[in-house]
Length: 212
Image 1 (tube, helix red, strand yellow):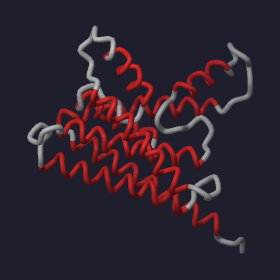
Image 2 (cartoon, rainbow, N blue to C red):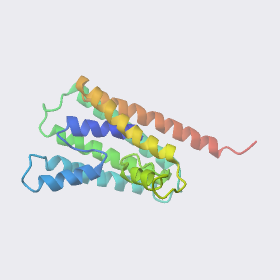
Image 3 (cartoon, rainbow, N blue to C red):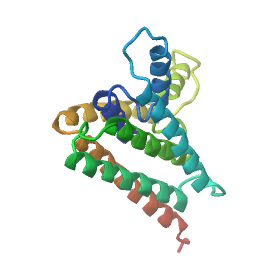
């Protein structure tokens, strides 16, 4: 899912006029600079993506209300919804190029922001330390601060390093696929989400089976 977020953020920043759809820190910073009036940075797109990300996280939290930590049926529902919306976005942008419909770029950024917010809420409920799927700043901080050169604290450096590497590789993949059509990296993200949903649900059902 972290790799998938890297793909979607590459789509947003490179294909949707510098709009982050997963990393909301980036949108807040862009908005701050844009509101100064001294740059040509966009305002509407990042603002809309930020609001819809918030709403997506609210919806995700509402679906998860009352469920235990870890992967639950509600987690599967959210990730399935994310997968379906991403597939719809991929199909839509394949059939109808962006720009042919007014405000289609902002609308796509809004939809992607919404699903990334819902995904982040579900990932947060799963409670995998240092893996939020949408941002790695805190992961990098922990990796450095707890390292041998820092506090020399015990840490899962492999998992932290992989989280950083995967979002980087996801962005690389998204940027590489984008010239072939914006639909293609969105489709790749959808397929990854479907795979993660399948694996997570299968593991949940396996863990529920009583021991022989």
